Every structure is written in C-alpha cells, then in structure tokens.
Length: 245
Image 1 (cartoon, rainbow, N blue to C red):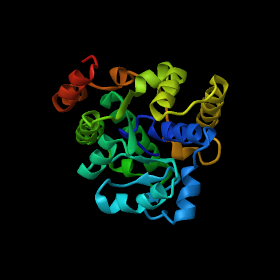
Image 2 (image 1 turned 30 degrees about the vertical axis):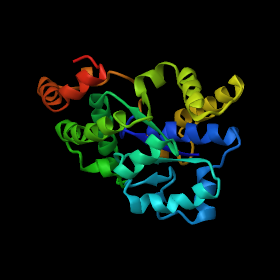
Image 3 (image 1 turned 90 degrees about the horizontal axis):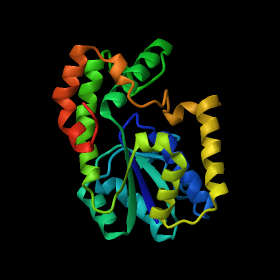
Image 4 (image 1 turned 90 degrees about the vertical axis):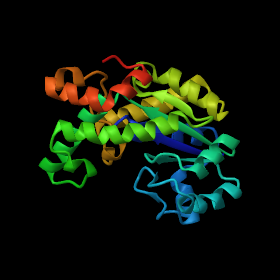
C-alpha cells in the first residue's frame, strides 16, 4: 500500500506526514526513509520529509519498484494530482490523504515564515513573500491544487482546523481509512511524541513546518485592504470549503 500524503502548504502537512509515517511503522509497515535508502529514491523523494515535487508519470514510475516489491509506505507532496495519480488512487491501488486549511491563515503563516527566513538568512521558498498580499496570491494558486485533490475520487480529505481541535479523533479516522489497527495508547504515543517534537523545537524541528498552529489568526493580522484582497482571490474557495468570510 502506497499512501500519498498531500496537503496545502502551511497547513501542518510536515507534522501530519510524520504522524502518518509513524502510525504505519507502528502497524508494521515500512518507514519511508528506509525505503528511500534501500531503493535509491533520494532524487525522487527529497528532503527530510520525502517530498515528491510533482506527480507526473516520470516521478511516479520509480515508486513502482518498491510498490511491486510489497512495500507499504507514505510520502508527501504539495503538488496537484496528475491524471496518472488520479487513476492510481481511484483504482484503489494507491491511497491518498489531503490536508487543507483556511488559506488566509496559510497565507499569514507563509508570510511569517518568509520574514523569519530573510531575517535569519536561511533558504526558503517563502522568503520571496515580502507582503501579505503576495502570500494571498500564492494561496490563490494553491487552492487550485486543493480543489483538484478534494475532487479526487477516493481521496481522504481532512481539515487542519479539525486536526487542531481533535488530533486523536482525526488519527483514528486516518487509521480506519488506511485499514491499520492500533491500540488507542499506540495512537496517543505517536501523537504525543510528535507534539513534543513540535513544541520543544528539538534539533531538526524545522522540517515540520509547524509554526503557531492556531486557527483564525488572519482576522487580527489582516488590514481592511488585505481582507478585501483575500475575498477577491480566495472567496469562492472559502465558501465552497465552509469557511466564514
């Protein structure tokens, strides 16, 4: 079983991907980082969080080798589903989870991430976001990928806000979707370990991309102009996804 952990940037996807990997490992499946090493997939599943940059056929083909060898693992992506990936998920051959967030909060988080990267001189794609308006524009593009995933047949869709409110319930729903059976204490152990990692900011914590973790922060942070831009660029998605103006 191959699991695609897709998600909107700045929606806790690094944290949630690691939780998914930990749950699979607890259930006797493979750690994706071990699979990457054994099958030489470093050029495809990049960085600490095993990120697949795009979902075109040429990127998916190398993953067929461990899949055909019987490996079960999860990898992460922010890319929209290609027709090839849609077919794999729709057929049930692969499974996909998708995590999304109020894009206004995601824009704020991306902008703050970029500010910190510039201040510290650290590499980040978000460093180019020099205004909240630019971050809103980025999320306007990201919601197109989000809607593609939300329309993907058999994809398991979750909201970041629900994950914040009840991580145990969302983890149990995920386990049911992945057909893995774990005792409640095993699930709690995974969540607690990842919670400590994100809160303590231990060495290497940056790969979690988990900053403030609070819903609705845009309401206090956006100016009237930024709220108007967000409505113009994101309003349709906000209403379709059930977010308040």
